[in-house]
Length: 109
Image 1 (cartoon, rainbow, N blue to C red):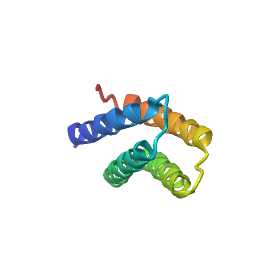
Image 2 (cartoon, helix red, strand yellow; image 1 turned 120 degrees about the vertical axis):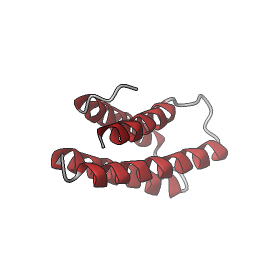
Image 3 (cartoon, rainbow, N blue to C red; image 1 turned 90 degrees about the horizontal axis):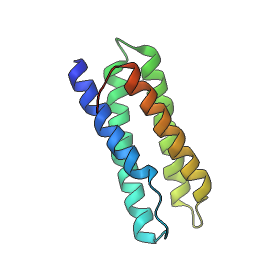
Image 4 (cartoon, rainbow, N blue to C red; image 1 turned 30 degrees about the vertical axis):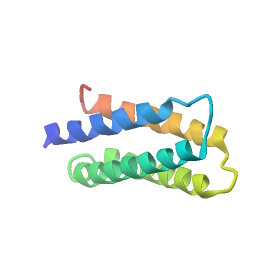
């Protein structure tokens, strides 16, 4: 089970690192791709929370909180003029939180 969790954490880590890199020009297409990748990340985080819940309730709780943060970003992206500074600040926070959990579980990516 630990191996599967690490595979999912590493995939989440790859996605959040990709999202953490902010382009110099923000286009409508970029924002659509960002939302798409956030949906994928949210699915991974939800799966990880369900998997971690029996053995690591604290990690599951943190993952559930991360999922809520992703949901907030998705809501903000739906706005006509999304608050990009806030969105990227939240992405940085999510990246740090996923990294902390990944390291705590000993997942090497």
